Image (tube, rainbow, N blue to C red; front, top):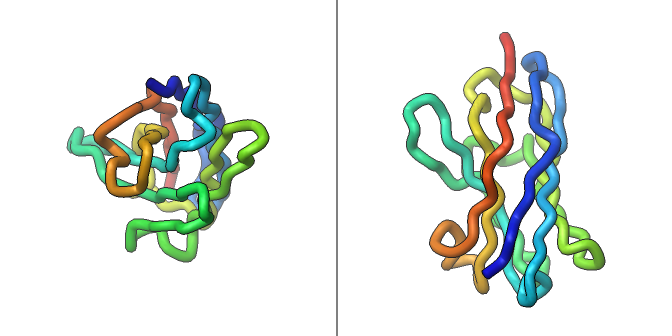
Length: 119
């Protein structure tokens, strides 16, 4: 099992930027794909972005061109750079990790970090 710790959430005005970080620990952390989900007021969790060890990325249509996922393999840390933020991006953002991209969301989850975008 991989342990995940998010950081970097907060309050930002619409149009602003924020960077989330997620540090992974555990015996197999360095071999896992990592990504982000978010949970808004409706309480459903939605896929945001993902990145595997080969550099393959996936993004939800709603964040393409505004969010960028990256990874520092030496630190087992994944980042989510969020720009041009909108009020509808307000959510709890969860870091996820899994042996492959297809399994993301079905393996390890972090505790979440709140992102609030004011209009």
